[in-house]
Image 1 (spheres, rainbow, N blue to C red):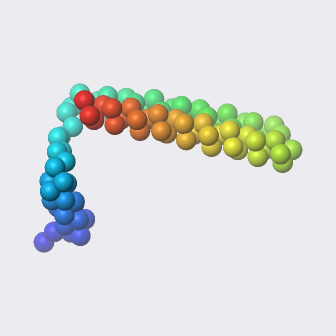
Image 2 (spheres, rainbow, N blue to C red):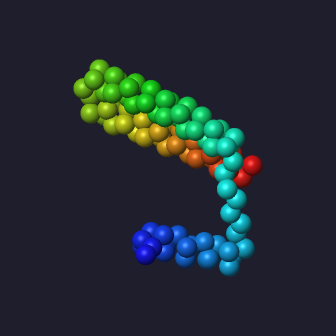
Length: 93
């Protein structure tokens, strides 16, 4: 018997095939490149988190803390979107 996940994935594959979307397996070189990109951006995100926490410990002004939070969120979103764009580019070839 198949799990509900497997059934859902089969259904999605059929829908993709009907829509004309091709799926190609990811090569070993692509997997390695994707892993490298993920590791790089994990390190950058961790660095940003440490810097943010350090800055938050140094300030007590609520307005400045809000500004720091906004900057951290923007930088986090930027790095995440860069990572996803690079991974998509690698997958497309």
